[in-house]
Structures are given as C-alpha cells and as structure tokens.
Amino acid sequence: MMKYLYTITLLFSLALNAQTAGDVGKISLSVVMPDNIENLDSSQLSRLESKISQIVTHAGISASGYDNSIVIYPKLSLVESNVVEGGMQNLTVVSVDFGLFVKQIEGNILFSSISKTLKGSGATKELAYANAISRIGVNDAEYQAFLEKSKTKIIQYYESKCSDIVKKADVLAKTQQYEQAIGLLLSVPEAATCYDQVQTKSIEVYKILQKQNCAKQLQLANNSLAAKDYGNTLDLLSAIDPASPCFQDSQKMAKSIEAKLNAEEKKEWDFQMRQYNDSVALEKQRISAVKDIAVAYYKSQTSDINYTLIVK
Image (tube, rainbow, N blue to C red; front, side, top):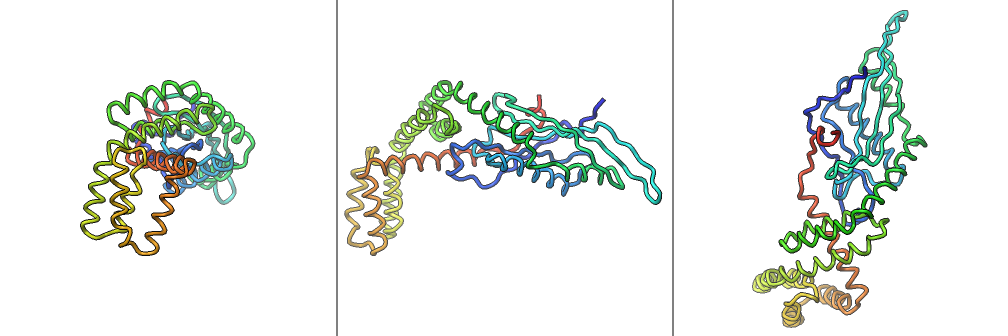
C-alpha cells in the first residue's frame, strides 16, 4: 500500500509572484506547495516547486495566479524503497509516484491530473528522493498534454458558468461590493467565448463604483488644491470618469488651475483630455482601470489554503 508523504493538517502556502493587470484574462495556475514533505528538506521542496513552475510556463501558462482560484499542486507517494548493498557504501533506491493536479478551489473541481513514477538513488533515502526529483523532465510531452487538457477544461468550465458569474456579480454590485464583483467577472479567461460579455459587465460595475466615489475623489482633489499641490490635484481629477455625476465639476476645477501648471503637467492633462474625447481610448482606459481594481482586490485576499480542502 502506498504511503502519502504529507501531514494532512498542513497549511499550504500559495506561491504568489508579482500580479499585474497584464495577468488578467490569462489562464494561470498558482503553484501550491506544502510546508514540508517527508524525506525532503526546504531546498528540495523549493527545487520541486521550481520544476512544477517550469512545467507550467513551458506550456505557455503563467505559474502565478491573478485570482488564485485555479491551482496546480503535487503529491508524492512512496511506491518502493530498497537498499542495495555495495562495496564501500550501500545505495538506497526509491520509486516514487509523482502526481500533478489542476483544480478550481471554490467549486472543488478537478480539471485534470497526471501521475508518473520517478526513480532515484543515493547514499540515503533523502538523497534518493532528491535524485528522483532531479529527473522530472520539465519538457516532457506528457506533462504538456496534461496541461493542454487542463486549459481546455478550464475554458469549458468558465463558459458553462458565465451566466452564473454575471448574476453573482450583479448581486455583489447591488450590495456595493463593487471590487469583488469586478474581480469575479474578470476571473473569466480571455479565451472563453463570453469574455466580451463579462468585460462589458465589469465596466458597467466600474461606472457605478465611479458614481459612488466621485464626490470623495473631488474632495481629495479640493484638499490637494488647497495645499497648492497642483500636480496631485490633476492626478486625482483624472481618475474621475466622464460618466460620473461630478465630472463637470472636476473639469471646472482643472480649468481653474491651468495657469498654475508647469509645462509637463499641462502636457499630461491635455493628453488626458484627448483620451476622454476619444471613445476608443476612453474604453481602453476603463478596461485598464477595471483590471487594476480586480488585481488589487485579489491581492487583498488571504493566500493560505488548507491542504485537506484542496484534495478532498
């Protein structure tokens, strides 16, 4: 009987790398690693994590999740261990089952998995494990096929859930949980056929959020103006969307300080005004803004995941 080399009650920490607006809409897998595995020290765990990340990136997938909802995690289980007697030193030989699993956490949906037997040898069992890990082929065609299958299933999953996601986002927006609503909508990958629909909905929510926040933004701009910090005043005013009810007031305030701007500040403000007057540029600006909001929302969420919740 194979023995799983995990302590079941361990907390898994999410391997979070830099998250940016550029990650939004891309299929990404957050690599989840255990705090420890029997017979592996911290450096070997790090090496295993690096191997998994390389497998993922080789398949053209980001190894750091934007919203951390889809993860890839390993399991190692001992199949066989033997000591071969040698002349000067005995040799430990191990066979280890190495499994990779891609799962959506919230729905506990396993998209795909793969299991391969690794063999390793060394003077100790620990060194034999390290040798087995070193033999993981990051360019292995079977791993790539496994991840391609995962990508297809991920896209199918989101396409089947699009209407539910939009409905849930509507509920969140009605309860003024705008950032969460935007984050949920933009968890849908660009490859899904409904991506344009959820992006449009995210901009609708963004406009509502802007209406809620514009008075506060205008007050901050007033405070900055009182402090004669004209550059910051313009930065604050430029964040007020033309669809907001206080947009005209923001324009009047900007007009009142035009003569006090230096050449660079005036240049930046004129560019911003051209963006507002160009509907295509304005839409791109809104898309960029909602992506920034989504990233900020997910960065604010906890990144610790309990192992038992992943594998059950």
